[in-house]
Length: 122
Image (cartoon, rainbow, N blue to C red; front, side, top):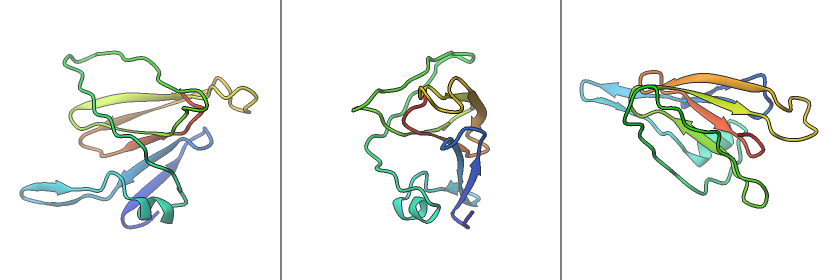
């Protein structure tokens, strides 16, 4: 843990909850959702290759599990910009000690938590 980033380990190896520090005032807050040096300092040396943003128009929207297989497999960092969502990571690495197991966490605009879902997970 650093003053810039809190890292929480989950029961699934490599699936992490990352909570960047927020610096706020009467206008709102500022937070770095991704900073390569901060991630490296936390022991995470990842190549950040893509940034996506989605919006669910209706409360209760269910989305599917997303993953890529090699050679297109990639880590994902999921966060919530408005409201709240429940995100799940499922270990689909055949031969893994936790194959088929899952972990879920609430991510919200209020709590600022992000879920790092490594390659090999849906």
